[in-house]
Length: 174
Image 1: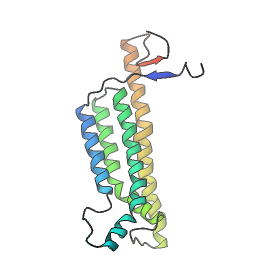
Image 2 (image 1 turned 120 degrees about the vertical axis):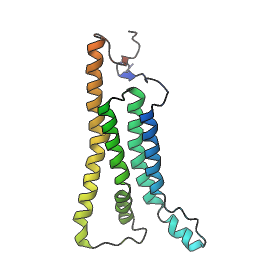
Image 3 (image 1 turned 60 degrees about the vertical axis):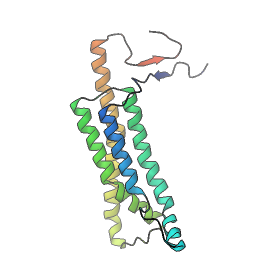
């Protein structure tokens, strides 16, 4: 059948490491920072004003959740907690936590909610800030895991020559 030769990963375990737990807490905090408002509105017009920020929250929540999911999958597959992995994970969390507000601001401008105003001359700086954050996300959420996976595979191949490092083709036993 088509696709039978596609490799399938086996998770390393279902237990949560301290690094993964800390990361989950930081992502939870980042999502908390995105919440429209912590105060319960007293009037209906305040409720409507808060609800107008829902699209901004949804988009930024989806972006942060996508990054969290990538890290979740990474830690499920690779039990890595060496110094380099810890430092790079902390840098990813720094980027996520720092860029939550610029992301929220950018999408509030895009959805024209929240009463945000800025001058046209500020647009290049806004996109520079956003671009740096996006580059950080891409580096730490995409390039970094591939680098670490390469290191992990190289380390495993030195110890277990002939093994696939957790990747087994379907229908084949090792």
